[in-house]
Length: 198
Image (cartoon, helix red, strand yellow):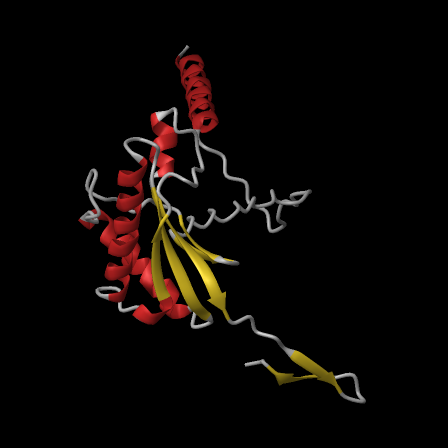
């Protein structure tokens, strides 16, 4: 009887040991690596962000400003908010020595009398010229100012948005050096700049 009870204890102990061993984490160890088949995902390169639009650009016979020069209402006084823009215009002019003459054009909307608009557009063009040749440091000899009043609208004067577009200052290049380059080709087919090149 005593031996029989001892056997039962041994069997119970074996079951307990097996249960505990079954719960333990199993670690597999192998010297060979696992082969991963296929190509890694391609890294998608995002396109670079577009360059911000320049505020001042030279295009053929124009210096284009992509912002408006702001004046006091019914006045030729340039608002301080536009000084930065005009300094940029001056910088661009000085960076392009090929530009020999620029006409600063003042334009008005159709509000008010023709004579008043003519005078205002003229005075605004002169104010811009004065700023560029003064604070901007541009040679006054290459600048001229002319008012066109309401004679050259670019938008409908019947809407406020159109009138706002018509009140503007433009810069027309009236004279510039166009670089003419002459190229000579030698016996070996090599090109050699002989005139107008840098």
